[in-house]
Length: 558
Image 1 (cartoon, rainbow, N blue to C red):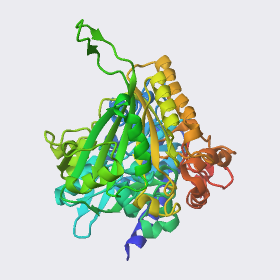
Image 2 (tube, rainbow, N blue to C red):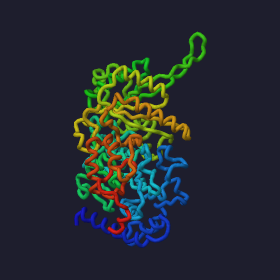
Image 3 (cartoon, rainbow, N blue to C red):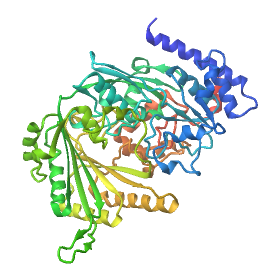
Image 4 (cartoon, rainbow, N blue to C red):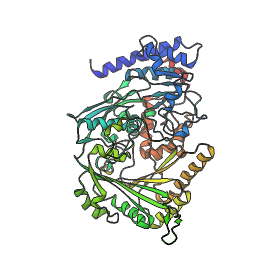
């Protein structure tokens, strides 16, 4: 019996078990009681003595700590934030099908959380009256096989854990994922994922070669069993629309024994504008081994001392441009590139630091590689939590000098919102726009992330900072892509549209779907219609099926 047949038989058994158990629990009792009765019914993969360890009702003493552990944005951790009726934290993959089927037959929405770095909290907050969180943080094994240059990594693992396990096995292998080590694999991969090696190696999902997913029928499917359409969809279309991602198999990439890192700052009076103008031209032609991120921030420089009076003189707000670079090679190889392509930046040998790839991971995560051991990447505790908002844009033509100067004025005026420019091109641009659902490839110079974080609680502070982010996004309209104005799915932004998953769900989703996926949106809708016609896996920005809306009560009769 082959693996596919085993998966089918196992999943069919779970479907039968769940449908039977839900009928026995269909009268009386709470949602929790019905759900637990279903989970522990005849033939369940979840023993009754494990239920208390993985299923948390709101009256459980540990409920709040389990919920809060993976909330990364304090905007979605207030007393007014809607809370799930149940949190389920499965211990192994075999637990997940029963969770899906029992939630489906209880007619309750399920939200899937793998890391919590969801800028709008859609993986753990809902506008529906009742919902369950399926939290994958226990399902996080990583199996690295250097002989085949592959790894299986489960959805609840973090990027930091993945990078550490790769480096543990080999000093000359790495993976082109994000730079924040506490990001969860499930969301990062299924939303496409990118990192500081994208110009040489493309996106994270360009290196996914297999996957395991639990579909709406409770089946555990690998690539062969799910088919190429669904496998295409979960490599950039967002896993939460199609099922529960259990794991991805990835192809590792080769990295040099030594890479080169740099971080240099310029203020406006130190030719920062010229640096940004030069950067926009260089990203189309510079060596694909080089990735540069620009951080653009309004700041107030420290006071200076008047040499005559000795008094401190306050300085006016200005802009700071920080260039952060990773080069897949030694600095002797990098200097000829930067001297040619980025002469205004004026990098010197003393600005460049050679290190191992895993040490560069530490630097990009804001750790000092000289004083911090790679084991810090195994920590699942994030930086200081704050309130925050993120937005995104794509730039296709260079922003001219007068445009940049007006941008600096606007950012100083607003005072808090920063921008991040991420260089595109190289290998990323060579891959067809429809190879995965992620369409932002050829013709893109760089991606913009709008970033604002604050520590003050309360509605007044939130409105103030959200307004700043939205104002800057509006201001940038003439300088970014249009028809559609493109956006990045993993920088989730509900400002660009949501769906109530009602009768007009396709028309509603088309608005943000065109921005996230361009011409790939309708193919995602077709895949959704085929694999989840009843729209069980849904959220406020999910892919809708084209099938008619029916009551989900009918599923118990199937």
